[in-house]
Image 1 (spheres, rainbow, N blue to C red):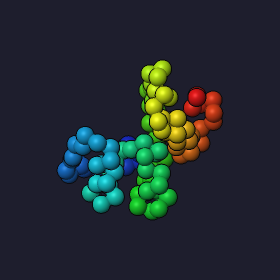
Image 2 (image 1 turned 135 degrees about the horizontal axis):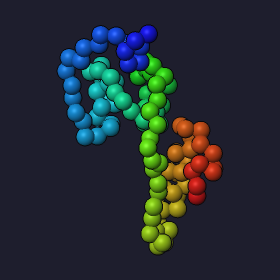
Image 3 (image 1 turned 30 degrees about the vertical axis):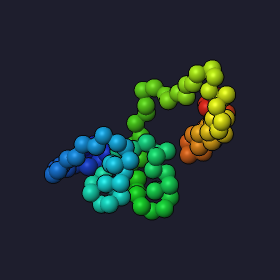
Length: 103
């Protein structure tokens, strides 16, 4: 096996630059090439067969994402429900434990 991801003599014909991850994912779903994306953002599309994972090479992020908020945020209506929802959503696709997604 040679080349990147076992591909030799790959010629890139056209390239696009997208400012939003959702646009590159939609382009790949529409058949306009391949996309590098966070698995959490495409897990539903992979499960539904709209996208495939052509190789199992994963790039590790150099740093994590963090939720940050002002001390008074939970005084606002709906913020506690949003907080629970986003933490639950973050745990599901990645199989995170409670320790990995600290509350």
